[in-house]
Length: 164
Image 1 (tube, rainbow, N blue to C red):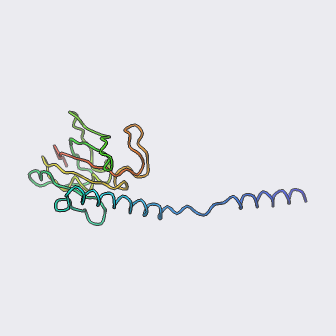
Image 2 (cartoon, helix red, strand yellow):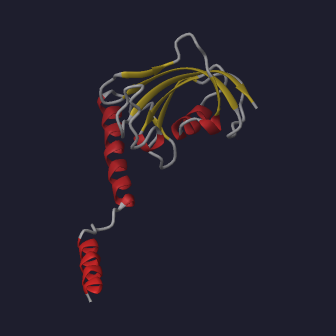
Image 3 (cartoon, helix red, strand yellow):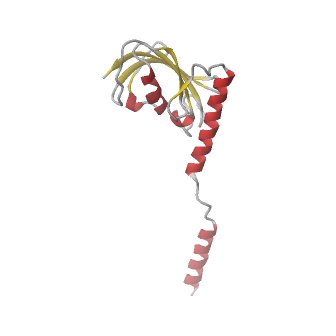
């Protein structure tokens, strides 16, 4: 009888400590609304309304600084060589820069915002990407580069080479 009573007490204690379910979808939507407002306010405050273009309904905005030449076909296996600078949109703090090193990546291995933004230009072109956190590094801190979770970022990317 004692065992049954102990089991019932443990079950009751376990059930009473349960929290309501964590609503991931609601949290993602709330962060998306915050990010989108940050980007739109930045565009308006900096007079970029006429040049910043949104990619579909993503919340990703791009500004073509130089279109580049020729035409390029981009897939997830396309290899791009770039020169870039990344900063936090709200503070302007630089967190990434390629300097004189020009890294090559396949589009399938970069953040989603780059996969959407780089195809907006051709080889030799330059684009500025304003990325909500969900298209950059999301809710994950990047402590080695000083990037807090849910950072809205601004990338200036020059596309040096494209290889399919």
